[in-house]
Image (cartoon, rainbow, N blue to C red; front, side, top):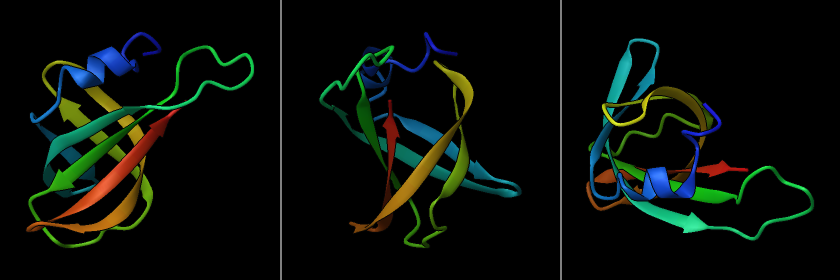
Length: 96
């Protein structure tokens, strides 16, 4: 999984649809941004953030979501809601 969590792999998903799942709830979302962050200390990889925007304005709070997409498979990400964006809700994951 370490190889899957790279800036380049997520950059390739820009503007593509993914599914964000919370138990029985499945949200359709688009990868809106992938941003490089400053590296600190002896981190194993360069940190980055990923911003998603869902098709629904409903806020499901900060928690672990299962992201599903054909390119990367399934993985758990801790997402934090950033607020409404257009007709949806934006969420951010920080990968360190």
